[in-house]
Image (cartoon, rainbow, N blue to C red; front, side, top):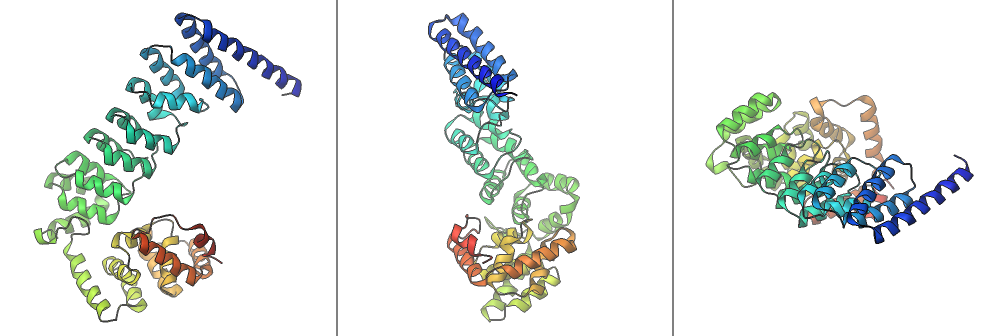
Length: 381
């Protein structure tokens, strides 16, 4: 596109927008409605700069203030799937009190940032939350609010959304709410991303019918379901934490070992090579002074950095580190190239900084808080 053409195009757009501004100021309701649809059609069909799109948004916003609910809802439907829609008008539509107006953009617009979705979920109606819960993808910060504020319909909807990500808070909150709600319990049990320790809690509280359906639909978890059912006893149930008898046996053994000063790298390595996950989780939890769920998340997280840092802080050898990596890997398999990369990363970690990171995690007690930039920068120094 030549510079002359661009200049002419810019002049033409400015002239049109100036004329439109005047029409908005002096026009009748009918002429404003016609101007709204003409402007919207032009904006969607055209190839405009960000500044021009923003100006269109200002004009459309003014026009939208003058039209009835049905027309605003129609506008929302049209702009929800327009990826270059002006953010200013998208935000205005999303925070409209009328769900017919807000719903389409809350559900489908890619122009809504995470902070806007969180703000909406914190302040608007259950119908607004339900629309958000149906988005193609959802970050943890958004699902935390949906789970915390949402009613039964909202929580069931977000639990069934495969594109939604959940924090431990979100999962544990939903497990609590799943008591007496077989639909939610089943939806949670079917999620592939549900942490193992949360799945155990879910099964402990689920009805026999839910367990049976999950056993049928999740053959990969059948053994764990059967084990939980067999071992479940009133005295073994706890509000949070694994409920199987094997866990409590492992906890007693490893805790005794720790108190006597015999829990060390050699014992962790032996447990890991024997695929004794309960003992490894409890042992690392005691050695790192972190909750079990943090250790379990580190073991199974595809991003192995947290596990590498914890092991380096404990000054474990690469051989022990490998045993831990294979324990948490899918089917206990790691490709040679991935293993070589992990070995290099582990060798390059700074032990003192890793210990500072561990102390940072201990102060947060969750292992998920973002690191201080200076610590992150010093890890591989």
